[in-house]
Image (cartoon, rainbow, N blue to C red):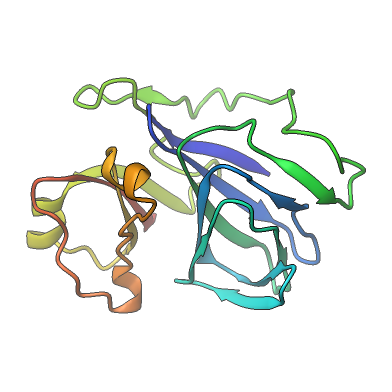
Length: 197
């Protein structure tokens, strides 16, 4: 299962739930940079070169052209957030898939969650945000760097910088306070904050 948390003109952020024993396709994004952030659970991400363990707090940077697949090894589901920069949902080639989707692009069918609409963010043009996961495990919000710095929250997991800089440079400086990351956020920048609800 996946659903969009946040979208603007530059990045697309999706929450993925991979059930125990299940895996995403072995796939590649030829043109875009992808970050996988693990919110909860245990799993592995396979590449053509090997395997990387994934657990709560893990951040994986996957460059354009790198094949990858993530699997939940349990117990329970693996909760991931996929950050795509620049946003381009058509930038996908599947190599292998357990659901007979190899060689296909993203699914065209989707289901709306009526009680969880993506709402416009008034101070960020073209941005939309869902404020929580469908079952309420995680909360999502937009925070200024100054707010993050002066009002640290124990439930914070990750802070993803918003704006064009990371898309242009090919590096998103994602902060991980749940992993004792003490780097200072840019005080004048907005961040998408992911937290336990």
